[in-house]
Length: 508
Image 1 (cartoon, rainbow, N blue to C red):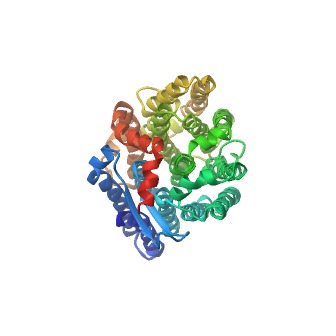
Image 2: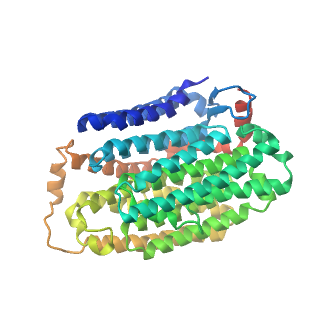
Image 3: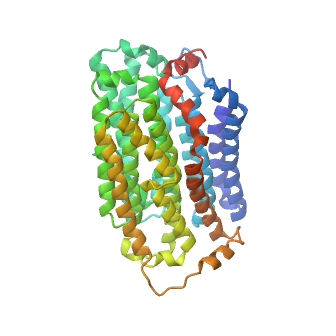
């Protein structure tokens, strides 16, 4: 039994309780508890990686914790292999930086904000670590419930409408997931994913098709894949910048992880092939990617543009994963990491820049590039990464995605990758050119901005520092992407060899 798995879920939940009562604390103490809570979480997951490095390297890493009796259908079972370790590590790292940014960005009802934020983090970790369907369903519904008030945190008509729409589609996706879960239970008498994996072939083909279709519907909604995508830009643009970073940068990657865990570990990918669903999902994801970029091109709201761009990238990632090759997994996982860094950085930097504008509309961004030059340079740098400009991490990951499509001789996929980059270049240039239009405004020179960074613990500079860290990571990992080869390759091993995970979970 590995208690660390429970701690990864329990620590954010405990921090959420502390943060709820932190309304009685001074601001500095509240911020200290928030950063400490996220920091301990990051330390715990990083220490698991370091301590078990040799096992990770040999693809022998596995931890498990079970609550309840093994033979009961509703046993709570948590497990961590190389795939879940990779996702837990990158998610926790991004969340830590988002929390630091939030301590200076959120200035109203901070105790409520952080309580909800850490409850979402606990549910995210639970979704990554759980090894049974019932607990997974509870966690993804918990994510929906607690992110809804974060979306409507500003309490305006726009945010309330976006939150209600997010809640409706989130619950709808959850209902589809629940239907598949119930059908599996009635047919197999178990909800443990490893046990389902061993017995799924015993289910009749029509019922297999029904179960898979409802799972696909649930995750297509959660991922914002066309044609059920319109809720995503409204929700991701309406909330505060750190929550936009959490939703687009982090949460969409969690749903991609769930997709992989369901359709490679629990339900063999061969079932999708036999039922002729793999090609359909691949083509739908590519169409969604292209449509996402096209809608981003016509968007006149900066945050909506970034949200539509996320639809483009998530569609591309899902499509390349559906190729089901080692090259596709490498490109897909690498771009998951790249997009997590880039989109988190873009939403945080745009949130900082938009503090001084009348609205998020492109017309109100005139001259903003002169007011915060270093932050805007960071914004441009990350934009170049999402376009696929070398030597940034976005270029490396897109390159491997493109190679995967070419090796599979899927030329439409390769076309979408290239077309998406060209369209992205155009819509980013729209905003960059507008931001650099000359207006009469007070602005610091680059030299003055560099010197202002000496006051590093100034609230404004803390937010800037987080933005610069994301920017430097985008540059650094572009030059040193080989650092991800070990965790990515071992995660690919788990995807290609699901029987190992199944046997270890069933072995207790």
